Image (cartoon, rainbow, N blue to C red; front, top):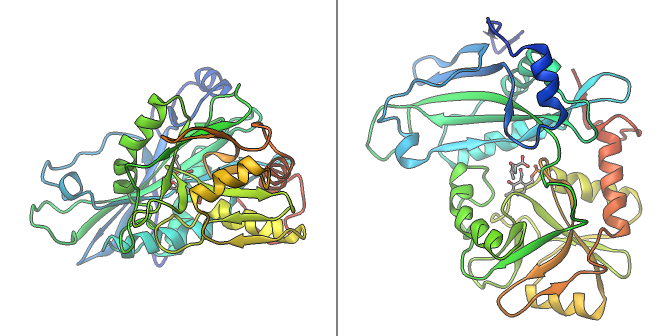
Length: 363
Ligand code: PLP
Ligand code: COI
């Protein structure tokens, strides 16, 4: 396969994980712990552009201790999944949207932009090489993690002139451990995630680094995830550490925070907006204040809330905790609209329902 004249050199792993061991690992992979045999790497420098595309055995990188990424965090990534379909085929879900977002993240981080065709080819190459690593358990998938790091050996603060792009793959099950009917959110009133003009809309590692202290606080408070408010007023609901958020009201309408540059433009978010409108539901992209959310939960106007993202899929939110006290949303368990959106999304992703928008990309 070639893209803009670039051919992938394919090197199979000389000692892949034994088939029986792989089967055992795929029975209960969890999230982000089980890795496949191969990885993709592509290099960039100013003289050669994108070059040296490889599918090779997954192995540690060799890098100089002065590599720019290790000092100034010039790094971006994506998250997407390959699914086993009902008919036995394999597909990606809206991968061109990930390719586009990867380029826009690169622009924000002053990094070289990987051509979208090359991004898509790199994903397909890795899925083909490691296709036996897609779990067959319900809810299982192959999580793909494309990422790019600034690899120039230089301590001056400026955009790197060299980059390493790579894709690794992880066999995954559910992101949240089963058991609880819904997740609980800790409303972060001290730490924020992204300020206007900042990197909130980019998928850069730095956004996640700054979220960890708040996520750790959430765990200490007995919650599953942190909910961030806007940085200017600490009032408007933005998103979770790694997911977007939706609300469902008593009139059947949905609402989600607008894309004003401080939240990640989630592909699951966009898909849910589209599917809900296809169902005839009203979806508003509008600011929602945390005090209004509490008032609406207490009055019963707010019936359901759910988180969504590639890793989390659609996860019901049962409760919010904050300094001024906790409140429950709806019954505290998964609501009807939440379950309907989860089913609609996963039925398309698994090839169990028509795909009117052409979101599935078969391998
Ligand atoms: N918001 C953040 C901060 C995320 O990390 C993610 C996950 O990628 C999302 C939202 C959801 O985005 P997507 O639906 O494209 O996976
Ligand atoms: C994803 O959903 O792909 C993410 O990057 C979020 C993270 C919580 C794994």
